[in-house]
Image (cartoon, rainbow, N blue to C red; front, side, top):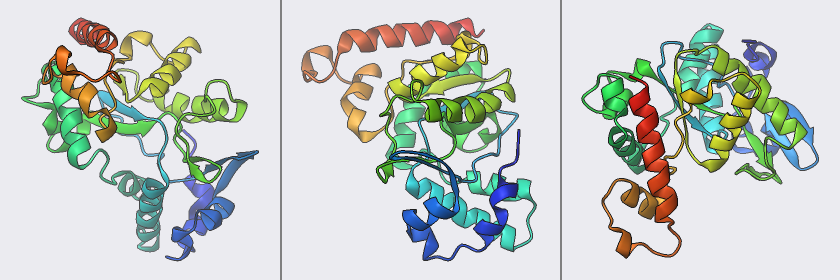
Length: 258
């Protein structure tokens, strides 16, 4: 995979703390592409854990995550680290921390992924078994719409610029991990993964979709998915039929992994 850091390394070394607090400055100096109100900004997320058997896939890095990665990358480069060392350190920015991590672990254990990985619990993926997991995004570089974090609109598989970013960035990542399984976090990410599969870049059987996103906004859906809240107590915003089907499907997919 092309190392884009080589293009932006000198710029990153020269970033000040003030620069890192301004999306306007970063967007100008680290610009990859623009189309109207959509902007794609470089962030040092190229590192791939080639030992990974599981990929946790989000939609795109947010501004805070990008700034944290840029700050660490700058520190590494100024200290004389190699590109690969700087990229690896930048990628390790505490993905899925706090309550979100606990919810994600509970769902991964509930579908039996820990048994496939021969772990006591998927909590080990954030500790001694970290070499088995790789966190990434279908849009690897941060995308902003009207200066705000991209959340799925416009649709990335229909928008020419976003589709290009998806196929060129994530498509190359997929090919570097031919034996891994992919767990999309959210419906829009799942749609993007299936689009990548339609292009012949990813085996659809390796996409384990159906988990609710582990955010606080999905607390009720997660509780039902895990069997912690009975159906009769659900609010109107939660569709138990959809969640039941998703759980049955993903359990069957994990069982088929062997």
